[in-house]
Length: 392
Image 1: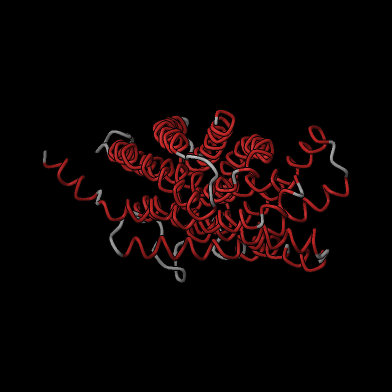
Image 2 (image 1 turned 60 degrees about the horizontal axis):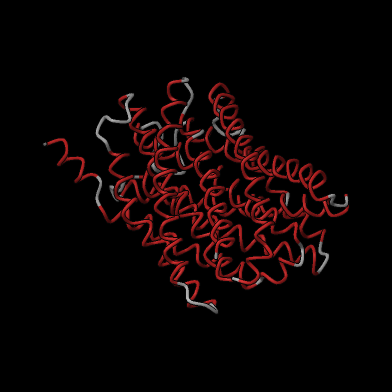
């Protein structure tokens, strides 16, 4: 009984509500995306690569956030940027390298998929690859400092970094990448400013070189990079299907622009649920070797199962109110609430399974749990949207 009381005092509601409320931030990228939807829809490849960029950025952000929060719990790094441990600077080296590799993976997979499935001309593939690289480069410059700041502030406030770090940085990451995505789209397809866009790519190449020269632990670097690369490849394969589904959805979404508005928020919310449950599980496994040491991940799952359906409905109401709707949305509210419930349970259990399997295989769960669950959550949520729009 005493352990339960201590656990409940540790799992305080304010950090959880703060973490889930970050989904409201994703209404802003949704608004940006819906506002420019006519321009984006005129170039179908943009609809194809947008969810892939969201998902892969979430993959890298998940690796970074998971390693930050677990390492803070274990005392392997300090909540500060300067005068930190070799593990911290090695992590920065790995993450900046992963941004470059992830951009190349998306470019390669998207190019091959576009050639095989859509018979896209090589000139359009060239522009698509430049778009991917420049958008990822600009996002990297924004999200890495933000992730460090959020982890530092939450840890010093006494809040669980497993709960705060990924949801907060994920939502702002979606905002950054959506703004950069639209901006680069106009630079390439409307204004033909290719030279400027090529300059945007330079940080993607320069930052890995800089960080690999600062406090690098080579053995740790290659172990973390190899495991993270495997997670990236798995995620890259999954997001291809997400992008394909989103492209199929294009004709339906044009008629229901509120889906553009709430789409990033719905994806992020389910990804955040899986990240909190999975990150808490990886911490418990690192400390005690058991997910059921103090049942913290399962308590998070129970809380989210109650909250998420109402959050999904609220986001949809915002979308209808701000973007507009031509018909009665009651059945859509019911379906989206049910989608939130089913997605929460599925992603929560899925995250626990990934954490347990990777730990038993002597891999670092932080390299796999959030990346795989976040991309799976995106695929699941997009599939549910496709099903709903087909039914109603």
